[in-house]
Image (cartoon, rainbow, N blue to C red; front, top):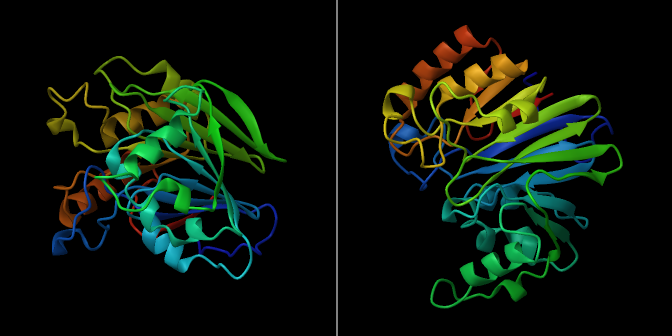
Length: 285
């Protein structure tokens, strides 16, 4: 499953991803987070030669710097939630300013009437930011939908969505390509002993599930309604749904490298082949 990232000229059936931001809440710069990384969520996904970007946290800035811009880029950007840590990197994503590029931005938790564009317009306006959204000329299309919808993104790439357990609304994704399935379950909470049916259906038999692991199990008391979960719950749901592997994601700012290394060992025991996501990590499905 783990391997080196191929470029956009890779074989048409490659299905792979790279983590550029794995932290939740707020970026961290402490030395104790250097191994796993301190940028907020951003995941680069390649389905053959087509690029999908999950979230625009601060990880999208280094991703943009590494992106090959020698030819026009056509890509889709998906938001799971409208929290600031998932969008604050967009104004610093240099590829989005190039009018030769074409990005379509998707969201399913804000309604189907253009709300994701309005949200980002408000985010990039005075007094929050000096550059307006209209200056980001690579953002060409807006794809609002209702969580629970399914659609064909491109030939051979299908997307299924589901409502997540979050007080301000959130969307989970299932991306299917080349006979493989990737589940993206971020910003979802859970209630102990009440498995989330939406999540179970979304991740059924997935090859990999990226799961919100903001809390450790012992920290979850009184945190049921924060829109975050635990790696332990992720493992339980993956086993129930028959998902093969899990990547713990959206790490708490106070979860330092040594603690996450311990979780890595426990994950390997409970769901072999699983991992704690770190910046720069490449996974090939």
